[in-house]
Image (cartoon, rainbow, N blue to C red; front, side):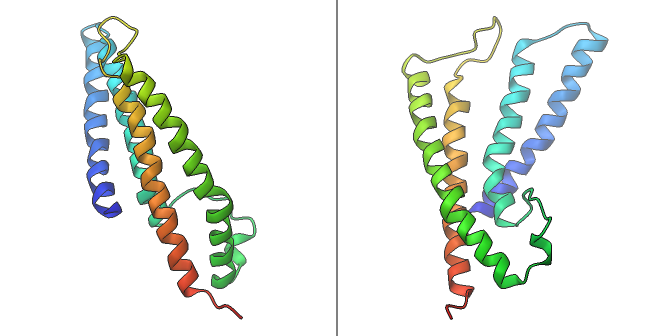
Length: 155
């Protein structure tokens, strides 16, 4: 499931590049700035970042500070990852999901749109994407933790 979502989300990068090209043409050739284009750019970027995080985590392509980690044995790396998942990632995902659902529900309750003229309607959609992105990351963190538990030696 995470791989399919990651593949689909990767196509949003193409849409984002095309949208930015349109924005550049509108601004520098036609001397026109459309607020909805600018807002759509950051909505798409946010969706790529939030919905792509679980895919990035699954394939171990996330940013990490490898001062010591790279020299550790595979078993020690698994233990560090497992402890990090359990103590930090999973609880943080739960906190963000809880907070962002409340945040999005409030936005939806009054059908929040852009405060700018000619901005995008339905700003609550991107707020629900925050929750969805962290739900996907939570699912992947649990899967990763279970896989690590299966591989670790319990001596």
